[in-house]
Image 1 (cartoon, rainbow, N blue to C red):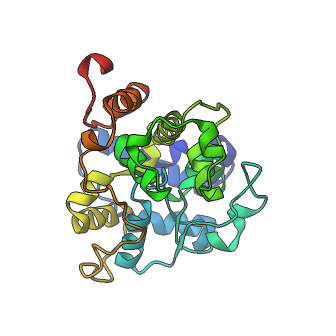
Image 2 (cartoon, one colour):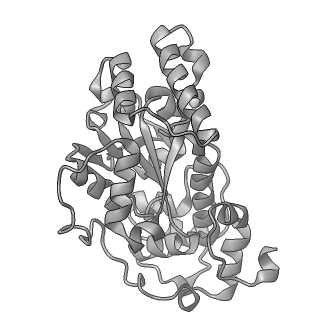
Length: 301
């Protein structure tokens, strides 16, 4: 959770709590000082202890890592948990029933840990926020073309095979969980191609962050990849996690299968048609996140 804090917490639902009002006042003071560039003389750990006391349960105060699948959530969650010696949940099996959260899943054993990483929960952010209003939410994002390339690697589809039809995906032998991702089954709109399904899924995930960014810590995968230790230390410092373990010996450990096309250039992997298609659909989000465009400039103006 950012220092702008509880104003995004559904305050109306909590307004009868004197303790919550006290915490809102603290966050308002922090926010005000941040806006005027005045140094904030308030320790984040001190604030978190107040928040924890209010809810009177350690498992009400959490770190929840969100972002689209294959955007780097696993690596960052694993390393952050190791860095702070936090108990963790990495992915939640059988999360959904008919594309809705299973009854009671947010109160299940998977949420008994301090750090929870589950990309699919990105699309159920409002439910999470209502259940865990004081959680620290982290959003991991990756360039859309690189994110799509990584998903394609995971399901053994070469990028130069795009566009493939949605019907092809439905009839393929891709495992159900990944088939749902490739079909973007949580989206009420069904598109004609795999390309469209994946880029609209990326776009919807990113909109979760952009529409609620005052409530998230953002990590760009590219920044993490450039300096992993610095990224984890900076993230820990922002959240209030002190270093309790040396992660230098595991920093390059593969927490997910490495894609066969990972080291290849985007322009070599995707056709110009696909690059332009992807970037034209999500150009607004790419601009907001300051991502590089690989396509033709007249296609994105």
